[in-house]
Every structure is written in structure tokens, then in C-alpha cells.
Length: 154
Ligand SMILES: Cc1cc2nc3c(=O)[nH]c(=O)nc-3n(C[C@H](O)[C@H](O)[C@H](O)COP(=O)(O)O)c2cc1C
Image 1: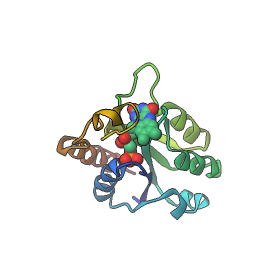
Image 2 (image 1 turned 90 degrees about the vertical axis):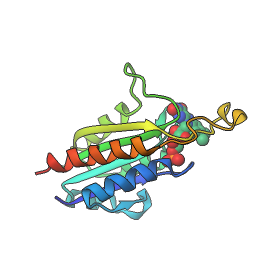
Image 3 (image 1 turned 180 degrees about the vertical axis):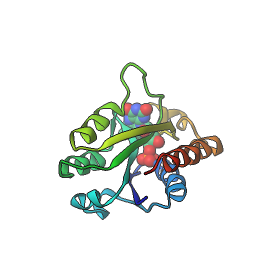
Image 4 (image 1 turned 60 degrees about the vertical axis):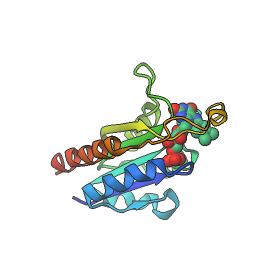
């Protein structure tokens, strides 16, 4: 199974730590959005897309990259995020990106999210929240997530 992970991690490197664990589990390189040709994604069986959450959305660099991917993709995809606050079940922040990927033709097989160190105002005033996240448990969960994707690979 040929896989690649596209990750924009700009704030504290939180999402990159998750991506690196997933990359090891999937034997997949982790790349910045600007490092990969969007038209080349059709050469992969599985593509991961991840970033921190900013004002309720994935990072603009990641969203812009996904918008530039040609339609009629036929591979599998997954989405992952780190965020200061938990995802709301009624309005998951992953939903718009999942829908966009599906419009591009991807089969989005799973999503992953965990907390990350967050210095967004007003949390900066108290030194940030989730200071030790992602922690060992989050990294282990990311590894198990990747293992599940590998096991489900075709
Ligand atoms: C300007 C800014 C806006 C943010 N907006 C949100 C938000 O809307 N919801 C949330 O849960 N976390 C928010 N966060 C926290 C980040 O999603 C969190 O720190 C994330 O782990 C950053 O990932 P990164 O280090 O990989 O960039 C925000 C952080 C910053 C700096």
C-alpha cells in the first residue's frame, strides 16, 4: 500500500508529532502541502490530511491544498487534527474537509483528533492549555489508528 501524509503544523508542532507516528505506522512520508504535487495524489492508495484547528477550521494552507487537488480521485483518505478544545459531535470540525475530499472522489475511511497545546487567546493569558498534549496516550492512539488503516489496506 502506497501512502503519504500531508500535514500543516504551524503553531507548536502538535499535529506534526501525530503525523510522524502515523507515518511510521504506515511507512508513509510526511510532507508539507507545498511539497507535494496535488495532481500526483492519484498515485497513492491512501492519503492523510492533517493540521491544527484555527477558528474552528483546518489550517488555510491545508484547505487550499485540498481545493487544488484534481477531481476524480479514486484512493482512500483520512483526516486528522489536533485542537485546543474537543470536537463537537453535533458540528465536527472535520466535516467540511471530509466533504471536500469526498467531492474530489476520495473514500474518506476514518478521522482522528486529539488535544494539543493551545496558546490561542484567551488561553495565552494563563500560559496555554493542554500543556503536555499530545501526550504518550495520544501518540499511542495515533499509532493504533495507523495500524487500523494499514490492516484495512487493499
Ligand atoms: C490563532 C489560533 C486559533 C485557534 N483556534 C482554535 C479553535 O477554533 N478551536 C480549537 O479547538 N483550537 C484552536 N486553536 C488551538 C490549536 O488548534 C492547537 O494548538 C493545535 O494543536 C495547533 O496545532 P499545530 O501545533 O500542529 O499547528 C487555535 C490556536 C491558535 C494559535
